[in-house]
Image (cartoon, rainbow, N blue to C red; front, top):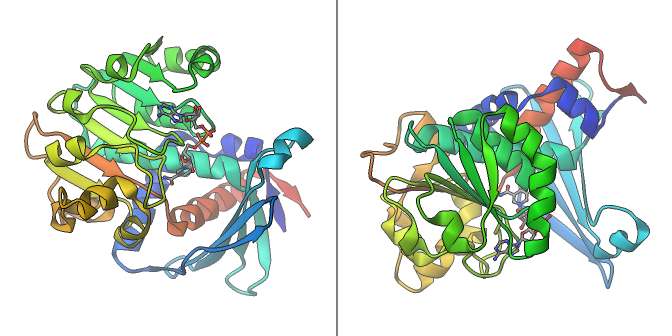
Length: 326
Ligand SMILES: NC(=O)c1ccc[n+]([C@@H]2O[C@H](COP(=O)([O-])OP(=O)(O)OC[C@H]3O[C@@H](n4cnc5c(N)ncnc54)[C@H](O)[C@@H]3O)[C@@H](O)[C@H]2O)c1
């Protein structure tokens, strides 16, 4: 059995690899070649919650599962509050043949979802970015944005203002290598005004910026919220957007408050969603139709993204002789 650590993942897989992996995963999902079952969660009272997300990609074939545990008390034990692991099963024997560190894998595949959507939907001359949230997902969201467009400046905003400067400090070298400078945004308005690409990766309950301020032609990635009562994007941006894409329609209709709240209020309709990103890749849905159109991508994540990227990381690790045998 091969054990692949977070460091191993980064040794074998780049953000561009992750974007191409997600592209394939979206196509497999939209073509019905992946089977998922609903997320199953168990809680240990007063301690935390563990969620199990299995999936099967018939074309490889590969069965796998991601396990994510959120135990806030871990912080006091000097352990991560959220921990994730992916297990892959050998398609010949059904036995687990790989254990992959799931937190880094999730960051990579989630950043890559926004990267892919930005590559496909943002205007080619996009040069100013805005990033909301400076937590665990933020660095890979930033890296993805800079991988797909020639962004020169990214405004960074976090509701916990004291987190902005340390994030800029740890991300600046990477951003500079990729041709961009990072700027601390003093307010949500300052982050959004004039931004061509906006990504939200926060734990907020309510919208993080005023959709009325978003410039024409901008592209927005909503990453952070995955519960029906929470949203990062307000109804103004949902209504202003000419094209709204989602990662997985079923999951979005169950989890994405960004869409479900305005739908409940009669301000947005399911028919206003142009399709899944897979539909766009397969040419079944039309992408941006004008330079001034606003585009939105809403993602909540689904297991196919995890299984596909885990399988590809496993194959590359075997090829390069990286990882530890157990
Ligand atoms: N779409 C997906 O597939 C996917 C995958 C992984 C994680 N997530 C979600 O993404 C979100 C971010 O994850 P993380 O690991 O970075 O979380 P985190 O807790 O490490 O960081 C969240 C950050 O958001 C900031 N924040 C909260 N409210 C804000 C607001 N109104 N404006 C600006 N900043 C605000 C917090 O201060 C914090 O710095 C989580 O909700 C997580 O569940 C989504």
